[in-house]
Length: 231
Image 1: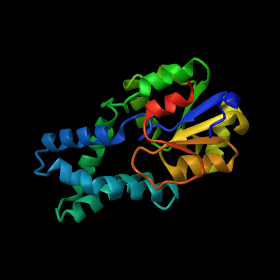
Image 2 (image 1 turned 60 degrees about the horizontal axis):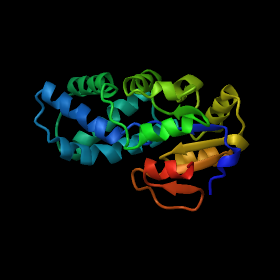
Image 3 (image 1 turned 90 degrees about the horizontal axis):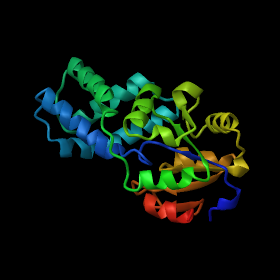
């Protein structure tokens, strides 16, 4: 149960929490495949790509692969899983076009603006994201989210990725908050929830992509339901 009375600062994850990564990613690949005249069915590609991408991000969080490896490996593994042969030069072109175009799409989860407008009246709002600094800032700016947030913390700038305690500590120190008065809202149990709870922050799991249920903190499945907690 969230104790709203002690909260001064709310820290949000970005992808899969406010910014609709799956929808925007799909639109980006559709644009790229059309541009390069790739005869690949986007729906079939995404069915393979999305779980592979999540696995690669897990390895990246754990410092087992680099940013460069993440960007290429998720494509290599996806095309391999579809038995599609593709040259390395083309893979790199797709990877570069993906990063170049992803942040141009601006779809947010339903209720994102309503939630943020409501919370902004009473709390200081911030973002903590493992995404790449330049790309994440473009996403935030292009989707109209920037005015809601006091601080944007990216793992690339801080030097530590969620769930490492340093990224949460850095965020709270800069925001002038404490674990007691802070709430983390995110979609990843491993990165957002466990990381925040370990430091004594409150946490709210926005379970946007059907992670296993748990009893570690409050779980909600829509931003509208999250807003009701604060009404």
